[in-house]
Image (tube, rainbow, N blue to C red; front, side):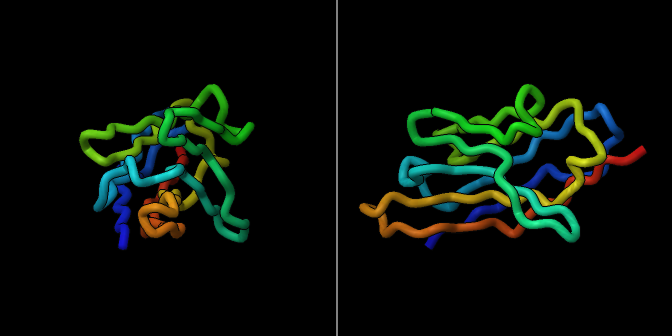
Length: 119
């Protein structure tokens, strides 16, 4: 069983920044991928960014150049640095982890953290 705990959300003005954190209850070396998704009211959940065990990253076009995903293996934590925030970035942000089959496999989600961009 894997638990993911997000933190770092909040209210920020347009153009501001937030750093989201996702702490895992097990070593993140067990994770094939870790990522951030978001869901705005009335919309489907969408991919924001993913990072692999090897450090390769993928970003949604809407956040490229503004958001950065990173990982701290020693702390079993993945971060999402969000810069130049826009009102359309307002959403609940969820952390996701996909385990390697060797460790039981599975797809895990955190409880979400609210990001609100408003003046």
